[in-house]
Image 1: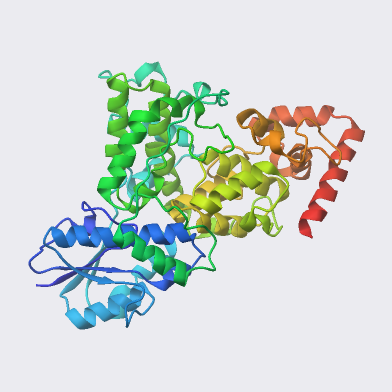
Image 2 (image 1 turned 180 degrees about the vertical axis):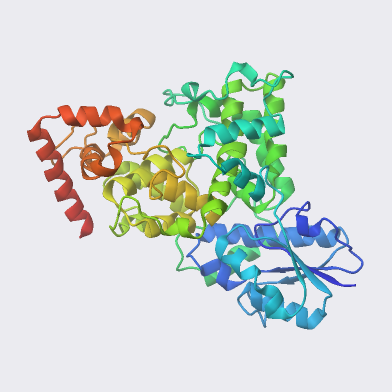
Length: 509
């Protein structure tokens, strides 16, 4: 009996459900680089190179372990350019008794998979992706009957389920569930930041870089000094370097931003988690061990673990619970086109320039740069949800719709009306000034509230609250800013609206 086991580019885990009962003597693993998956959104060139190289290395690992791999390269003669096309070719050539595949992480592809058996006339077994702590059914059960789905309560259940940072008595370590109040410090002047571990491209990666440079030169991004891990072993090395050198500083400075320091104390492993080179629970247990061994403080370890078994699992649950209608919501009726500088970084707003330039160079920016700079600006000016979500999906190496869409659509721009987040994460320039040094190199003055030289975030923030008062005033987490707005002098309100109108008109041009 021959079984064809189809492995996708973000399923590079030996423990993958579709490989759990692999028979190396009879089964064939199918992997394919296809143009459709590289271009359904204009992915960053570094992301394409990373995925293709990691796929090729994974295939080599499986072959070394004794498996037979049918690997289709992008430039192979006969490549159909689609996953379904390569499935048809493989089943015609190999005539397997059945096909086994782990479900795709994105709705568009998961929906297509449901039609594969009818397409090829061969039984297709579609298995759940069990590389997550929380299954689809478990999340649906957790959400059932709840008026609001809040990450904090979900996160506590995931802590209980895994036992991570839990005492023998079933209580959270340190007597509390999170230490957010200790994790919002700005970066002290002169604080030394350990450098990120780099990986020199081997011959396989260099071949991929040439391919991507040739085929995707029109895409956003920069391939220079490509240094990502592309194997499970390298990803483990990157993780260990973070645990040894940066985890202790991650807690207090995880929201900080600094010019010339692209990574600060962040792990930069989300891309490895999302393609399967690292196992999320194993990563969390190793961070927990650092705390138990006294190598990292509790606030840092808890904050790191929360991002993985809290936010990462939560957004996946929200995605599969509410798709496909979720992507079409537009609660605040935002309709402005995405500003062109999101693709160039050519803007006088230094914070946006810094975040977008980093994104262009590295296919990376950390969560505060995404949420409180590029996301906050899109929220304040009212960018169409589809356009800003498409941008995030295209430009980051860790972006897959299951994780990108809820974070952008729900968290950053509040287009879901509060399904995911309890309030819009709108902020003025004061927040950016407090958490970064970006304002010091800016053409605008963050201390000025109105006028030609004022930081646009300052007046756009209040203009956003005024414009959306009918929908947002009842949000109890916005009670304080609305009380401030109600006490505001009418002349200042008029200046805010005038400055906002002028800025938005220029933005449209």
